[in-house]
Length: 80
Image 1 (cartoon, one colour):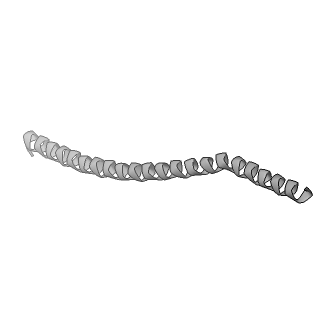
Image 2 (cartoon, one colour):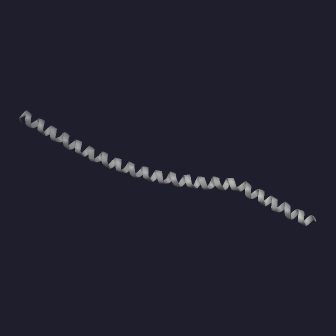
Image 3 (tube, one colour):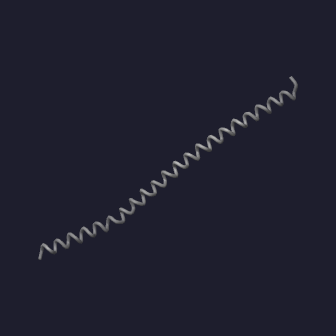
């Protein structure tokens, strides 16, 4: 075999290998992008849930305070 033919075959195999690796990288990047979108959606929903929960915790003492005031008012009415 001629040396030039061997080099052409090697070059062709390297180009084919580079093409396959490029396609694989594109597929991996697409998967990572989809995974990041899913994770971002999850974190957004978690943030909303935590915000709603913390809002409930803030209003809980107000509800208890109001309940105690109503109880005290009824207790004072019963004593009179």
